[in-house]
Length: 84
Image (cartoon, rainbow, N blue to C red):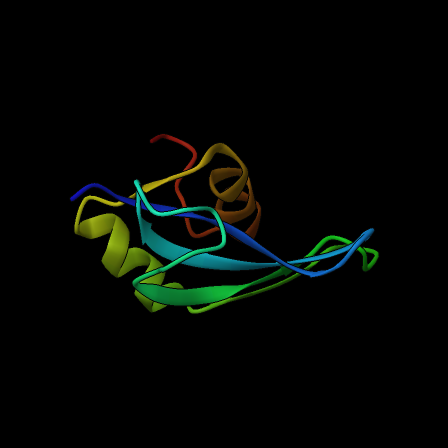
């Protein structure tokens, strides 16, 4: 089972709100996930991000790969090293 750290979309039409989740790579975007790691709200200025950094580091240590968008969020928050 390949684990990915990715966004799951919630919220109303034209009002997106995302959960940052660890999920099996074969699960649907908004479907089953293993653990909720945080939230991302792009509508606020600046975009609001709330993360459980310890759990994100745990999942990356276990071999989970973040999606491109989540990787940029983690870099911006200083959790994911730019060297990786």
